[in-house]
Image: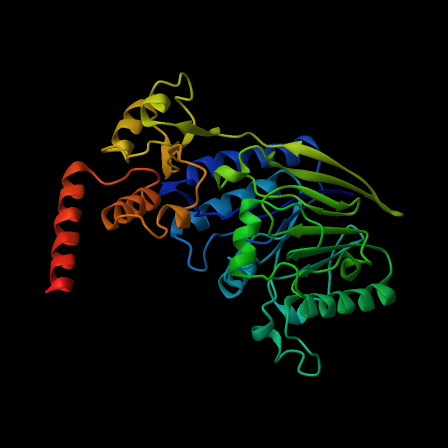
Length: 379
């Protein structure tokens, strides 16, 4: 059997306020072409189909078209829900979809597989401990790691009775995955990196192949345990990460191997660093998303307007002003005993303004205020 492992479509996500629907539609159409070209038997989507729990109508249209395209190409589909999805809304669609499309969102059915051509697919929807404790009241389920371990016990118990080749599909943060900006955000928001919410690879043992979602970069944790990543670049930090999916080969003996299939990148992502004048003079990059990191010591006027006139797809600006050269003395040294009060204020302004001290007019005002305070103290 040939399986195409994909995940984290995030249908409906914007990129710095720009819609990505058309770009995603084109990439997923290419994925459908790969299904046909490589004679894929089943497509696995490991969570985060949508980017929000309440996707817009256009998002449902894209999902329906892609699933129909996969079925027309001759493959079946197994989809699980991720932390961005609403399991209830995603699961509601299941009875309405074409035969051969399986959407697995019910935790109660984790130990019951979907069997396709003799291969058993076990879907694990994203498991929030607080929302599933009532399902397994006798289990100590305080962390996602504990919930995932329990889910895998259910799967392995069924595997022991059923036998055969099996695939598990999960949306989680597994130990050993490469850190990415997206992962760091997810860790801050949902997980606790380095704590029990990290799922050890030993907890995923058992199935012949483990298709993971949640991390936007591809990753091979073990030959049979992999992340496929997202089909689009959803941040500048992911710009150098390949986009695509894993073509997995299974035999009657189990996992045989996996081949990476690249997906097209609709628009490149480039980060340009320098003063506004320097960036505006940079050649090329006219058709790329641009992140402009401005190093001007004083923020320039209307930088986005000027940047977009030069780079139509400038998406965001960051300010990282260059620090002015300063003596080796620390700020504490500069404001130490014996330093005149006006100089202390001037040094403080230079410290918080990245080297820009007080202007001449500010120095005059500072001197006047200090003089009035001293006069009051002597009265």
